[in-house]
Amino acid sequence: EAGVVQSPRYKIIEKKQPVAFWCNPISGHNTLYWYRQNLGQGPELLIRYENEEAVDDSQLPKDRFSAERLKGVDSTLKIQPAELGDSAVYLCASSTYSGGREQFFGPGTRLTVL
Amino acid sequence: DQQVKQNSPSLSVQEGRISILNCDYTNSMFDYFLWYKKYPAEGPTFLISISSIKDKNEDGRFTVFLNKSAKHLSLHIVPSQPGDSAVYFCAAINSGGSNYKLTFGKGTLLTVNP
Image (tube, each protein chain N blue to C red):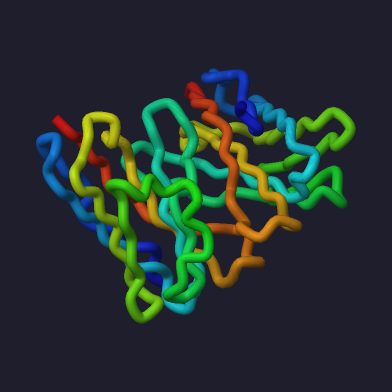
């Protein structure tokens, strides 16, 4: 069974530029999460989707961050414009349903904002 | 306010010995706990979990102990192997909440020396 797929794996941009990350969850997993992991910290939840509905986006900085999960499968997380403090690893995870407490993570996208 | 704390940033043990990684939490609403292992440039991988109705869960070389009164859990790895060298994250969930958000600690870097 294929795991969670993310692309790109690495991205370097200048501040004020836009950037987008893509995630394909494990087949059949209807719950999808985006986390941000800063250096030396644990992952922190940004947004959670149940199918195509964003059911928890309370931690998403909505002035510059946006996300979508069209058709309830793949998801895209966007930052526009990026700031220096956005440098982090962005992790996507999926689980079978909200009660599926074990979440399966992708390899992440390491973003560097210069 | 950090609700899940891993107070040891790093731990070094000899191959064949026991590794004990500790985790403390402050939120009494947490009722499910997970340990994740993370290798460099990879996403966290689920290792083992425990429900608050139990005080021990074992899976091969890995055992997690939960002390609810002390709000403390620990992961024991016996015997430790060089391939166990990784960052270990403790995470907690409030299953009674509506978001199934994993709250992570900062992680402990385990190094197993041959």
